[in-house]
Image 1 (cartoon, rainbow, N blue to C red):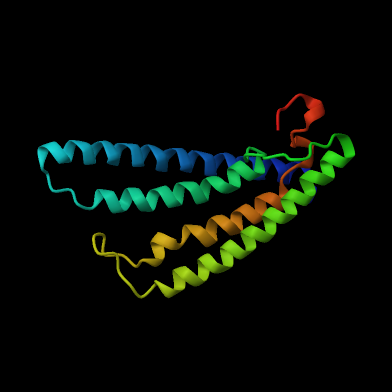
Image 2: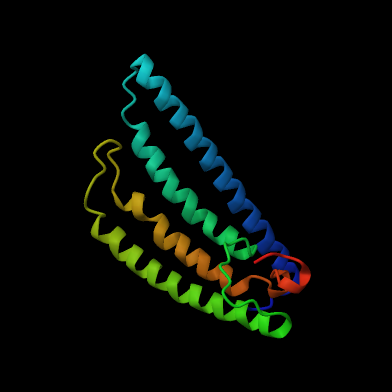
Length: 164
């Protein structure tokens, strides 16, 4: 976790808030399209493309939400060994390092998968399948960045009354 100057920290906080807003818009779009699918089943408009967009938006929502969750320490914590104080801070650092390794591998494999599928076209939307898999390496890279620059002083600890 790299300490950032105060001005840069504010800029990163704003960028994270912007990502959160994008995730909300994507999720609202998914909800609206799923509602449209349900109506289409009874009305028969023939909106065959909505299911593929919803599936794609789900992946984009999850992967763009990842850096928001990581930066704000909102990930689900399964704590086998609850440490307090200084040991708890090192526990968070070790968990962050393990998460960083996972995200690097996920991003690398996600990039390779997207490139393997770049030559194929989505049957309904007519776009490259790489667009359907692009959020995996993008979200993994942004998640790595969020893990590296997230402020350790915002980390929840047991002695502060947070359940983990």
